[in-house]
Image (cartoon, rainbow, N blue to C red; front, side):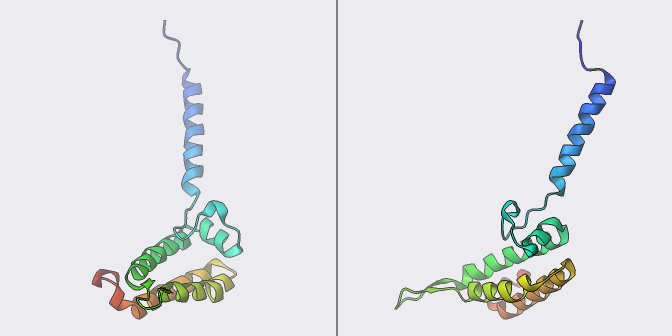
Length: 129
């Protein structure tokens, strides 16, 4: 005789599994950093808001494309040239990190994305502009 789980036990196991899946689905991973190590208020806001995380992901993809075309080494001095990285760091420290709520961050990200597309248009494919 095959002794299996009773119907109520199977339902309980399935419900527990669904709860675990739901918990994992609600964890947001921002592309620019690992949310597991989020420390600042701003990073925690980004990690807990799927819209902000999506904007962060979009910015990270766009930044990587721009930096791939603009970063390098000076042929004469050997110095690292990273104008987009310098600009991005300045924006992050003076604009993004000054935000105190999700609405401010949304506005900061959408403005920065538009600015990046405009300022770095020559480094982007037409589809990314």
